[in-house]
Image 1 (cartoon, rainbow, N blue to C red):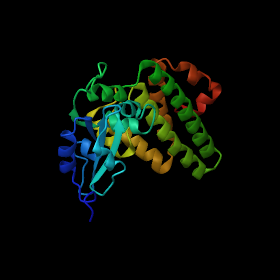
Image 2: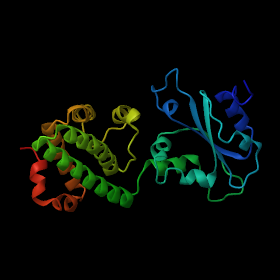
Image 3: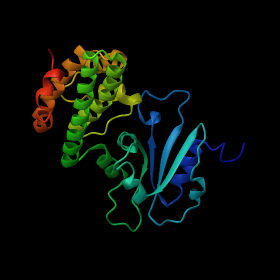
Image 4: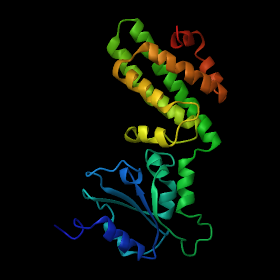
Amino acid sequence: MTAQQSLTYDAFVALAMADPAVVGLVLKGSRAHDGMATEHSDHDLYVVLADGAATDLRRFTGHRTSRLDLVIVSLAEFRAAGMPGHERYALARARIVLDRPAGGITDFGGIAEILAAKARLSADEAFRTAGSWLDAYANSLYRSVKNDRDGEPLAARLDATDGVGHLLELLFALDRRPRPYNKYLRWELARHPLPGWDGDALLGAVDRISATGDVAVQRGLFAHVEASARREGHGAVLDAWGADLRLMRPQ
């Protein structure tokens, strides 16, 4: 076993904290979500370096073992990570291990401020994103219900499953938050509920729809979604579906 392969999380953190080039250490993944870590969980750590800083720590770029996964980036790269992108949720719920001023940089707001910006969509971004996902959700719902009506159960279930993904993107965008990864959906809803939604009821409906494509459950859920979307100013997206809305609503 090489020295890098045997490197532990604690040993690396101590090494990084002693290096003045390091302005932030950010832990993401299961170990940043209380109660989610298991015996199989590694430590996923962002190592944030002051822009242009020289450091020997770059030798650990790409380091990945069953115990420690390192992502070494500059401060500018860290600001851009997940903006947009799949990594946004991971960083929105990340845990700060180290946050210290970047020498010589007067506009450095700190790692905490950067993470806070990733965790909260701007009003304009949220509105645009929600409108797009609402239309995608309505599309999948319409196709699912129509396929069920026309005797195509497999197509109906597949469209229903697609719709669930679009629905979750929509609901979190309406609350100006990035959608959690599926693994953390129950965790997120329990600790950070979506306004106006019963988390357990939502999970139950999502489970039922994903497993069976139940049209009645899909329509019942859409009724709640439609009311929420209209309250948030997305009526035009729904109205564009015209008479097809009747097929999506509870019968």
